[in-house]
Image (cartoon, rainbow, N blue to C red):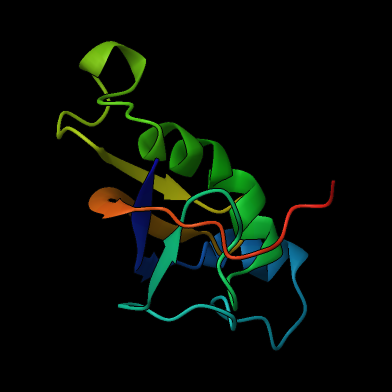
Length: 112
């Protein structure tokens, strides 16, 4: 199992939807920043948004276990990469997930 690198590419804002549905002080995601990098495999990285993790963990898991391309190769054509977003419809954060060559290590003691 390999670790995956998660890079925050963009924090977007759907201004028309935010004007209609969000509060007056609503902005782009306050939890993530463009250029931030996280490493993950079987567990959510420390400091990573819980909701974003729920939206992307299956891609991290698949890539860390050797998945190459997704959806018959007509989505992302670069081997070992996925471009995903969180599930916030008003201000989605776009992320790149890349499989690394670094082996995963379990850093906790399993409960028998």
